[in-house]
Amino acid sequence: MWVITVYGKNDIQMFEFDNQEEAKESFKKIKGSKVLSEVIYYSDFDSKIIEEAYLNSKVS
Image (tube, rainbow, N blue to C red; front, top):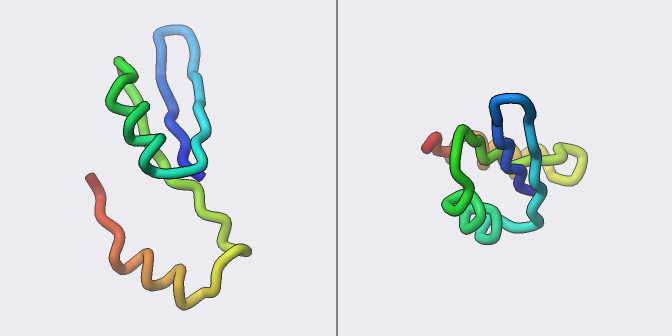
């Protein structure tokens, strides 16, 4: 799951997306202060996969 958090002057809005492509497309269109986050449920993955994803992650 992907989440875009948008920070306004008086509020915070959050939008959920099922895939990265849709989230990135929307992220480009949203104006203002915003954060794109990937939500990973550790209980859904093998610990080896989690470790590999962590080691290969990039901050952009």
